[in-house]
Length: 608
Image (cartoon, rainbow, N blue to C red):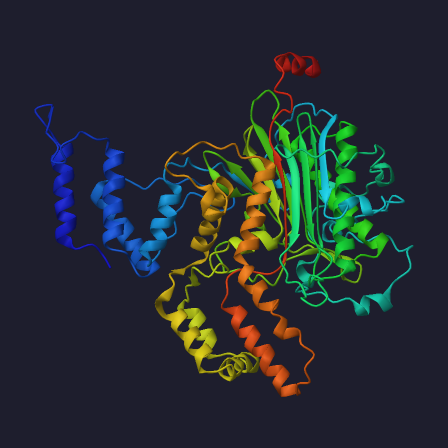
């Protein structure tokens, strides 16, 4: 709906009255105060947007242009290479808009995020000399990467052209496992035209100089844990069988690892696809291979620019995939982040490479929580949480699926907390999964619903069979009880809730508004708060599935057993949270013992 002509004329008269000059004397503003023109423009723009909220994007454009004509200025934008993190998505729901606006109040514009398929797509940043002395390490759960042996030999990587570049399979000398591959089950959507990427320009036609076998020549002590600077946490959100006491989904298929040095930090997290020992083995191999490769390059002093870092990261993914094939693992996601100091500067740079749905975030006291791996998934579209998007391991023969493999880079500050989460954590911060918002249905979605295939009809029949009460509950919830959000608002609300939990924790007893005190957020408290939130949010689903009545050895007919399963499924579908393995690994950015005073002098000597 466009603003009425009378209102626009009134605003225009106020504007001309306040800012017209007569005899070189400025008139007294009708607002009572002399305020900058930018302030007036923002206030007027916000007033009209709040009063006249458009219902369609085309009307939004018309209203926005009309406001700009009235106030005589343009709305400022903060462009980025990926997605503008400072733009506020339009919404028909004033409550959601108020939440987003309140969350962004007082927050500075976010730093740019650069992303591409290789390091050649990103700016080249020169780095300070990296120190090699290890200060803290951590891995888990249940031994983490230490439960896997290192790469036994150097795999041959002959890249003939760009099309073959991300074929990370081993050479043909290893025996084929056709019989085993038939038994493997993968939930990933295989897309052959997007299976192979284009990174041979970074890795090079061959990698004979990359000695994977000696990557872990230094025996690290993986028990030097530091709760304030570098640590991780992993738990299972699945229910326990009340009879056997065994948790569903055992063992935990998430694996993390972090290494903190004097002036750099490396952290990695892998999430095994599906359940079982094969998924956990794949995750362990991915983290072990990647960290071994990165450690060797750091110790050998081979990383001088961010291009070198991304070259090394792609090689690390190759090493992780090769180790999976060597040990016979299945499929896993992988996200690796490296925090490094910029040369002749106090700034730091974060280089991230990820495949799948394990995401990387940065917490800053001024900016809040922001996601670095935005380019690996389209936040403008509703994401299918059942599809990881990509994985290492033998997805197609001996090849991985690298559809969403992404290299990302952003600038960070000393004191920031870099953390990687599995989807068991990040998805539980989603407002739709948390059941306090519902997805806004567009006209296209409604048309697709009316033209569904037989599978969709089967689902609708299942809903009817569950009884009138469940059908009424579903219809009532979709109509008006919860606010609707689009994809951008969904992602923004996830970040705002994550920021709130990082700062304040989950328990309301921990929040003392009467005597606010600035808390120091450590890596350990961040991991604990995020995992505790996911655990508490999914509590109702666990309690329902842990009901002893469901595990009684009663002789039921097939129809009765089917009806009971439908009843339980209907109950938990209306409950908040997602049952999964939840893991977080975090690292605090900065010099371990404080930045040395003679750093600039040392850098000058190196340049000579």
